[in-house]
Every structure is written in structure tokens, then in C-alpha cells.
Length: 297
Image (cartoon, rainbow, N blue to C red):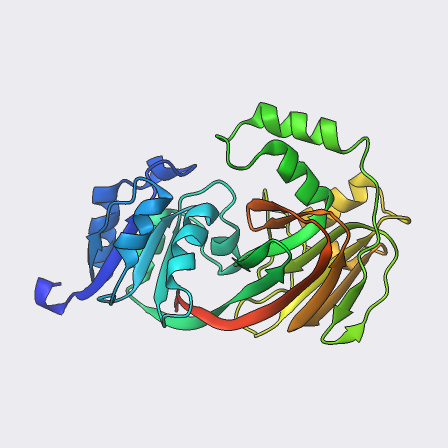
């Protein structure tokens, strides 16, 4: 293919992502060229570099080569701008890529964008006592948020710290009531071990909590786990592996566009970050079509 036929694009590449060794910068540029894109690499050594890298008019789609954290960091600068994104998974969990059906060799995925179409990709908006937030994967409280907070997601990744976070959190964890309104209607529930509002199917370390979630349907999936009548850990693990977590007796799922949670000081997570809540109402609503994502046809 001649250069004159190439479509201008931008490439954001996280060289420190979990599986970045599978696709170097030069290889990615060549694969995208095979797909018909002249992708301009814009260096982003730190998240702060993304603001100047993505500021102003974009020449074409933005290809994000990295993990879920890289996607979030870039998407925060692209949401609401009519931007189109191509995901090239180089992370550890790759929750967003998996929800979009993008699995396998990252260079093959890059080449597959030669035949791709844009699709809407929603986000979630949060208004809370700590301020405003946006999430692309999930937002919630309960045992996962508590473990993530104990792990300290801002520190370098460490399996040892992850194990310590589990061991320090789980023995003393207590389910808490979280009064909730779904699309303006009261939605009672018992004290909860877990509350997650999902935009995509998975969060965290590939926790597929909402296997039916679709990030372009203009809805969010509320997953609540009964903290008084829990299933066994084995049942939860097996259901996650089968993609049937939402069918367990202790799990309640609601699909809606708006939610109001009445928090009482819980720790919340916003994708892979945590927030400490002083208490008060937390409003969540879908941001339909915040982005567009390319999906190979």
C-alpha cells in the first residue's frame, strides 16, 4: 500500500505495560501501516504527558497500545470530543479489549484494523462528595474496593502486596447497607459484600462480574452481592470462570442509566483508582457514546 493511501492517526504506546514486550514501537507502527494507517507516535512517558499529546484537533483515530490503565488515562482526555479509539492490548488483564473481543497477538489485532468500523463506547459519570469522576470499566464499593485500597494502586505492581492486601482486608470485612435508587426508583437490598456499577464485563484482575454488559448500549449494569447469604468462594470462582457470575443466588443485577447510592463512608473505586468517601449521596449516570471504538469486522 502506498503512503498516499494511508489514513493519518495517532499512536499512544505504554512501553511499561504488562505485556509490552509482545509489540515494540517499531513493530506497532509497521502493523498499523499494513492496516492502512500512518500513525504518528506521540511520546507519553508519564500520564501528565497525555494532555499535550492529545490536545487540539486529532488527525484521525487514536490507537492506544497498553493496558486498561493506559486506556483510562488517554480516554479521560478524549471523551466527549467525538474521538475514535483503536485498542491494542498490551496489559495484564486487558478488560476493555476482552469486552470488545480483541484477544490474541497484539500485532495481529493492529493489522486487523484494516477492516474495522467505529462503534459507540459509553462511560460512567460520577458526582460524589469528593468531586466528579469518570469511569470506563467499573465503579463501586465493597470487598473489591477495600482490597484495592489496601493494595495501593498508585504504587508499583506487586504480587506480594496483592496477597498482603487480601490477607489484611478479608478477615475483618463486614457487609454494609448501601441504600440505592435505580432510575429514580428505590431498590432495596440487604447489606452488601460487593456493589459494582459496570460499563464493561470485567474489572480488576479479569473479574467478569457482568458477562452481559455492553459498553455501547447506553446502559450500566449494577451488580450487588448479598453480604448475609453469600455463596461459597468456590462457587464464586467457578461462576467467574464460566461467565455466569450474575446467575448466582446471592447476586442481583439491574440494568439502568442512572443510580443514586447513599454512602456512609465506604471506600469506592473508579476503575483502578480508589476514593475515600466522607458520606453522602453518590450519583452515577451513563455517558452514552462518550467515545467511539474501532472493532475489526
